[in-house]
Image 1 (tube, one colour):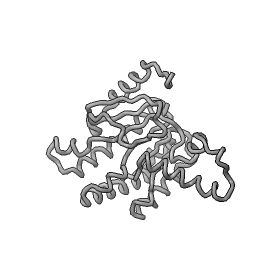
Image 2: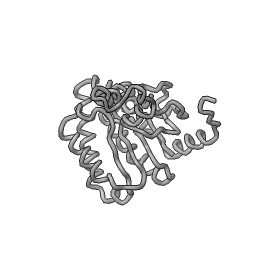
Image 3: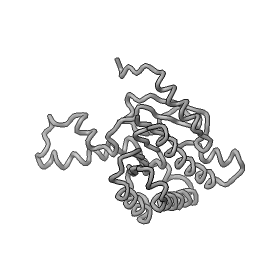
Length: 227
């Protein structure tokens, strides 16, 4: 099973508790580690986390800087964690990664290389990500092959576009904590027949029981795939 999650509600969590907003992101990062653990325990095969959108770059500079620092620290922790290595987890980062500072990009590349041969849970972190941008980037990858005559117009189809997306697999279930009822430019190509589960819980408040509830909700639905 492939589950995708929009990590929404870190700042509201902080405001609710009267703590600095960057502390809310810190709590959200801890929840990511817990979610990886739970998905491993429940036999989930793939987990895609919407960690940082293109629009997030427009937030106050101080907040963005704090988030970047948190990203780098947590990636380093994963790389050094013996416990994480034992979990057989493969990590991928998808999005316009070159928009991040070089230090973070290097940490991402190292973690991807170090976990590339793992066969357990695959975790995709969507960073500097936007669903529309993903489609545009896929078209840009295809365009040179058309100009050079390697691809003919008749060869352009959904299959070809899908091969050039950041993420090829499609999630069966997309979970959105935080009480919002919108997709926020997340996996708009891949989630066309995904089941969506919305919850009022803020991301740092999300529990293993909430995850199990979402999975059971999905299992009780009849998926018609447009029929």
